[in-house]
Image: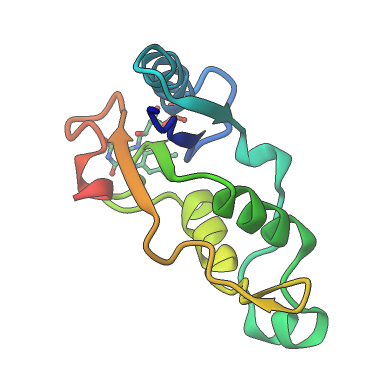
Length: 136
Ligand SMILES: Cc1cc2nc3c(=O)[nH]c(=O)nc-3n(C[C@H](O)[C@H](O)[C@H](O)COP(=O)(O)O)c2cc1C
């Protein structure tokens, strides 16, 4: 029996009309056509404070990072479409990854949501480099 991979798709920009959002939409359709079970989210649904270890010590990992961590663990792989900002990863995406990397427990059970996760990256930009410096 064929195993249907579960793929979580999101973009590194939540701007209205974002190219990366459109790339994520295309990836969502393509992956579904290839037979994957696809979940498409927007990082706007998971607002997070700027990573700050004092805040983490005081209040722990924010609930939205925990939720995202759980969602990531429920999928076999991720597809991230992202622009580059100043030749690097946009702060929204970096901050999200940084917080999720701090999720170490789920209901008392030790977890590492990103460890060993298969991730596909695609970039989009109206600039000269098409976002490639963010994903290479
Ligand atoms: C702070 C900032 C830095 C940027 N730096 C780059 C860059 O280094 N290379 C590039 O190709 N485009 C750069 N851009 C242009 C973005 O790639 C462009 O605005 C893109 O459309 C943003 O992605 P989105 O459409 O998914 O929101 C930058 C934009 C911003 C706001």
